[in-house]
Length: 204
Image 1 (cartoon, rainbow, N blue to C red):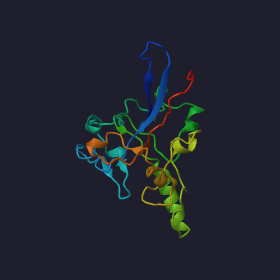
Image 2: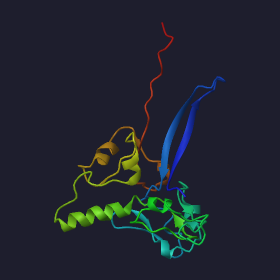
Image 3: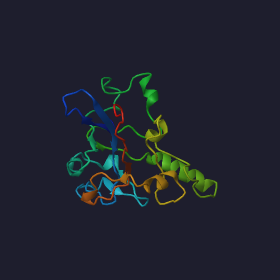
Image 4: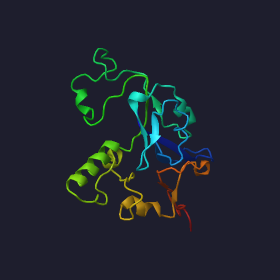
């Protein structure tokens, strides 16, 4: 089970050589503002939160997989195995692997759909902390697990509605684009085009 998929795209090799340029594109739930997955769920297990997230109610999902069929980004995954069933060790997390599980997120049951949640538990934790301290959220106060673990800082997360966040400034870059923008899904994920320059090697 993976909530983020790294897609690989290759350029070059037209001349029969093995000189390829590889591009890596992380593909996760795009948290669409006009999400095709939401209206097709017969039990309303997927819905839009007030803060703009496409969220999933796992214990309401009945596993029809309609949302997966309707997702143009193919980032919704069906849970085929009971990862949280200790009676079936081939699928569960035996010692010490159980310590890698996130205590803030339940292990989903067999037969439900899963996807990237934008680490909603981290967002709520930061919001609750700010509420207890009677203050507003600070810019770049929280981030997702994928952004925190990325060594090259290729993934940046934040509140796109706040001008003070780094992600908002990056989204204004001339290289910014949305995947399948022509579908009018109004995705929350922004990608930056990779700019390359032709080599001058061998020129006089």
